[in-house]
Structures are given as C-alpha cells and as structure tokens.
Length: 92
Image (tube, rainbow, N blue to C red; front, side, top):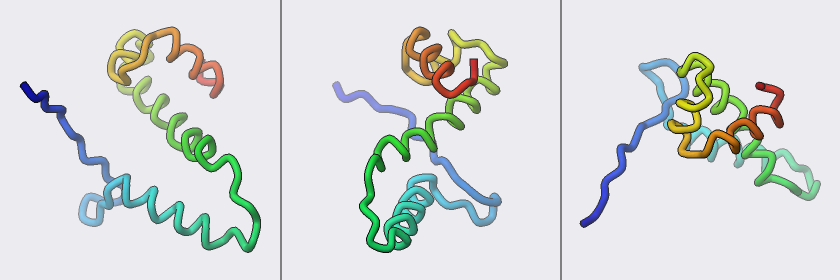
C-alpha cells in the first residue's frame, strides 16, 4: 500500500504573484553563483539551511503559540532536537 503525503504549496509574494518557495530558492542560488566573482563557494549547504531553518522554526513556534511539543510534532522532529535548534538560533 502506497502512502500519500499532503503536499503544501509554499508561495512567496502577493497572492496574485506568488512564486513557489522552491523557485525562490533556485533563483536566489543562481544569483548567489552569478555574483561570486571568482570567489570559491564554501559552506553553501549550511548557509542555505540556516537561512531557511530559523524562520521555519520561528513561524512554527508562532503558529503553536510557543508550544514546543506541538511545534516538534508539526516539524516531525523530537522535542529535544527542537530545543537544541532553538538554542542554536537564540529562539529559546
């Protein structure tokens, strides 16, 4: 039996001109590479994760009214991992 996941379309911009989050990330990365001017790109994976993870954590915490147990459940991570990430970003 194949399981089906709910897929949420993330959009950035006004409702009439929303772009999927995936497209925004792709455009941002292309711009990043275009503006390197010969400089080596290093640590890109971590940089992208940090740019996305912190606002993700904040948005989920706002949505849950600060309930870390519920936030961890929504994110699909355990509460201890969430607390560690919150501390890392100074969101605790």
